[in-house]
Each structure stands twice: as C-alpha cells, then as structure tokens.
Image (cartoon, rainbow, N blue to C red; front, side, top):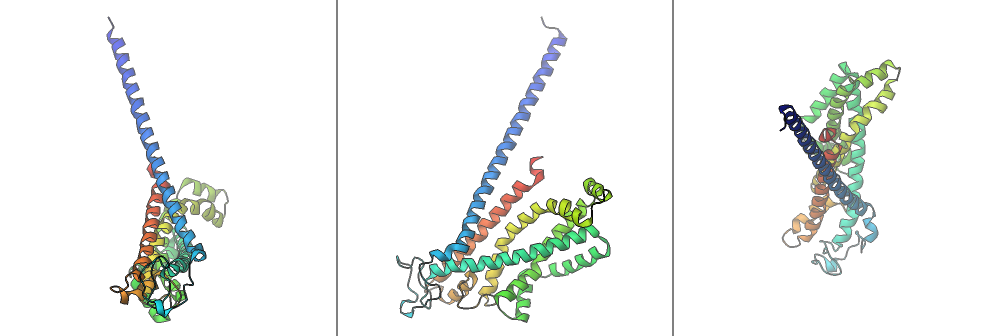
Length: 303
C-alpha cells in the first residue's frame, strides 16, 4: 500500500500537470486569437489598398470622359453601355465615380498629412515640456474642441469662400486637435519612464529623445487614429461638397455628385446611389481597418 507521503506527491504532480495543461490551452487560445486578428487586419488592409488603388488609377479604366456631356442621352438608366447610368447633363456616372474617387482621396490624404503632422507635433511639445507652454497649447485645443467639427468648418468656409483648398484648410484647422490631445497625454506619461530619464542623464539632446523614444511609442496610436479618420474626413468632405462649399462643377467628386443628384432622387436615383455607395464602402472599410489595427497594435492585448 502507498504511504500518505506517496499519495501527497502524486496529488502535487497531478495538480502541476493540470496547471501546465491549462496554461498550454490558454497560450494556444491566445495565439489562435492573435492569428485570427492578424488575418482580419490583413484582409481589411487589402480591401483598403484596393480602394486606394481604384482611387488613384481608376481613371485609366473610365469608359468615357467624365466631363463629356451629351444632352440627347441625359438621365438614361443603367445599361450595358453605361452600367451606372447617365446623369442630368449626359455624363457617364461610372466614369465620374471612378475619377471622383481620386479627387476625394487626394483631398482626404492631404488633410490627414496636415493634421497628423501639426497635431502630433503640438501634442509632443506640449506633453514633453509642460508648464505654461502646455497650458496655453491645451487651452487653445480645448477651445477648438468645444465646437462641432463640421459646423466650425462650414463657418470657416463661409468666411473665406468655397473651394477645395479652402475646404482643406477649414477641416485641417478643426481636426488636428484630436491628435494633439492624444499625443500630449501619451507623451506626458512617456517622459517619466526610466529609459527617457536615463537618456536625459546620458546627454541625449531633446530632439533625439523626442524622435528616438517618444515618437515611436505614440506612432501605433497615431496610425490607428489616422485609419479611423479616413472615413470621418471622407464624410466631412462629402458633407461640405453636398452643401456646395467644396468641389465646384464640373470636376467629379463624390460629395458633389450627391449634391447634383438630389434634385433627381425620384426620377434618376442612380446619380446619387452609386456615389453614396462608394462613400459608404470607403468609410466602412477604413473604420474596420482602424478597429483591426487597434486590436493588433495594442500591447495590452497580448500580456
């Protein structure tokens, strides 16, 4: 017969074995979840890349000149020759959607470049140096954040006049504040980390600390916010174009196509439907891409 000591040793070995198996199962589940999220992120990234490719090279596949008019065929419904139909002045809607994608994305990427650079720079400077500079910059940011983005942009465009360049300036003026807030909060935490303090005592200059230690740590969050803002900026741009404040005729642009087609919603709905679908798909794909990037780049997810 086994002694009590032998039974106790067996129980301990059994508990250790069960613990190891549970740990292995948990590790396997986390690894599988990580793989699924990586695959999902890669799929949405490919979809976003496809949309961007269509935006910048779609004009090569446009079957007709997007500016060519033919009043004898105006308001013709979709057909084999014109899959998306013809608008109110005889222009091919498919060609205008393809060419309008490039105009919309160029403006969105230009606005993103402006707001990311300005907002991130302001946030890093404010969070790292602190003091009066931080107070002044953040109060300015809070004042701008108090106004609704689109309404404030409409007011700015109304003062300086309609036009694509004025729209970019107006939206960039109100959009950089989110990046400044995010970058400032993360920088204020990073500057107190041990590796930053050691770099300061090691004689590393401030620009080197900001570029080598601060910026790389906030960059993942900037990337996620940028991906999410593609959809938001696309909607804001479309909204201003729909009001006739951004793109001007006859240039094709998705928001202005909605504006042109609103008077024919009941008689020729295809003028608005396909431009609206293009905006909807773009916003949905980039929002899903942003959510997927947030899951993949979040370091807490895999702790």
